Amino acid sequence: MQINISSEEEKIKKESEGNVPNDEIKQLPESELRQDIITGDWVVIATGRAKRPEDFSKAQYSTHELSTDADIDDCLFCDPAKSGQEKDILIYSKSDGDWSLRVFPNKYPAFSRGRVPRSLEEGPYFAMTGTGYHEVIVTKDHFKHLPDLEIIEVAEVIDAFQDRYLELMRKKSVKYITVFHNFGKEAGASIAHPHSQLIAIPVISPYIKQELDGAELYFKSLRKCVYCEMVEYEDASRKRMVCENDTFIAFCPFASRSAFEIWIMPKKHNPYFERITDEEKIKLAEVLKNSLSAIKKTINNPPYNFYIHTSPCDGKDYRHYHWHIEILPHTSTWAGFELETGIEISMIQPEEAAKALRDNLNNN
Image (cartoon, rainbow, N blue to C red):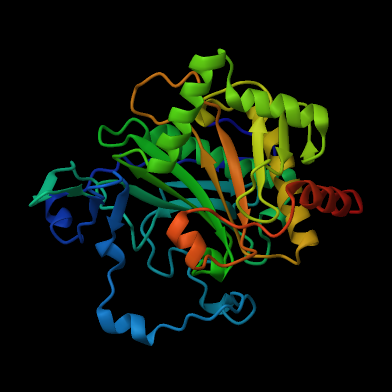
């Protein structure tokens, strides 16, 4: 279900069914999903990324930025085929024959590909095999991150998100698909080359379930979508708005968890990201690029994460939910209070943060 979003670009699609031969399955490390017996939270024991105890003592937990110039000759993502990555699942090509974006399986997956989950019980505890899919979405230019790309190039990334989502949501073992982007070492990016990731999993995360339950409770109480209420109020008050167009709005949430946090929401109610249209991809690309550019200019290109929150793909009805993107810059480090209580401390009012972001964006 691919559609051209640029007349100058030809998309060459190579779809993989995700089936892994039995002899290959035996050689793959098997991840586990373990459930907290008290809270119900899930933890992934990612054996595909396994370390020995002594590896942690050798690790350098530095906070310097990822290098760019120094590692381009050895960059794993500049030439994925040469570096030994698996065959592309999806590749977009430009008119000159060079690639602009490619998607391939993560070489060190958090979840084990191509398996049916099975129960792993121990005493009072419950766990299951960590079945899922872990993919990497890579853009061509080593030095251009999302805020540096053209809008049409950002839209192509969004198009790839949708393409892979639509393919993986059909898998029997998949109940939720998370799409996320890490920028900077402190945000979890181990490779400097711009890339996003997608993980399809057999469970719904506690955070998403909390959002789903909260949205459903609000809807049952007031017969309104809580996210639509937020969009309407933020668009009218404009105190925390960062940027907008006729389709999407970006604003600093009223209860921001971190300084300069931004949420991007469609103005029209829609529970499902995967149903985004071609026109909406362009509009979303504009607001996403502007939001990331505002963060980059305002707080000196900090590490950040963003991720898409959308309805699960488990076949249930989530009409009360509203898909959106959350962007969290890394402006502080969790300490004892945050870790113990789960209550985050933000050092600036979201109203002030939004004004600074707007000002820097308008002064472009």
